[in-house]
Length: 131
Image 1 (tube, rainbow, N blue to C red):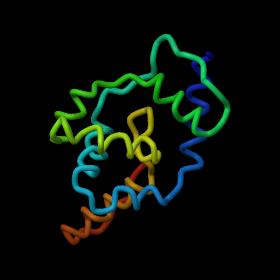
Image 2 (spheres, one colour; image 1 turned 30 degrees about the vertical axis):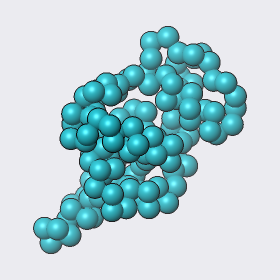
Image 3 (cartoon, rainbow, N blue to C red; image 1 turned 90 degrees about the horizontal axis):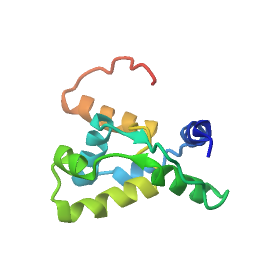
């Protein structure tokens, strides 16, 4: 599979993200911890990529994740979650497209969490550069 296809498919998902993903994170502190830890991870695409098993949106999403390399142990450590609870938090974040395969997060979720933090400190938001 062409490595550029990975980037193109990932770009498509990011351009078509859904704001409803925010509802999934909501007020679940453990999911929020995983979301916060994700951008601090070393994440890369696999050197030898497998081909997708279909052309549907969900098959392409699964294909992207099957060709994404990161350390589960490092993510557990950075999130501070109990290893036994971790998979139950990570799977929904992946399945509902909150976490992206390049180490970024759904932009609606990112803005939601930033606003929550700013409200905690009664701070005014500053302009953030898009990645």
